[in-house]
Length: 82
Image (cartoon, rainbow, N blue to C red):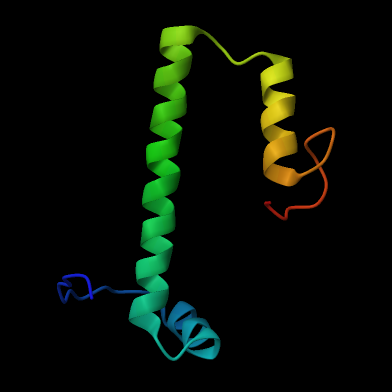
């Protein structure tokens, strides 16, 4: 098991109630959400750095990325990742 640190987090009461409806492991749920947000921010920073070095993504590159992410020819539609 990974090292952990106990902290206190204050959330709106309605959010806590909804969390408890979704899971018995609120700490695990929050840890997953934080990890997902960190990955999102790191990826965004990487993409921004790439564009600063290489220039903006072309429409073709964006369409190909959308197709890979969403699994459709035009990069839109089903949100299931392969």
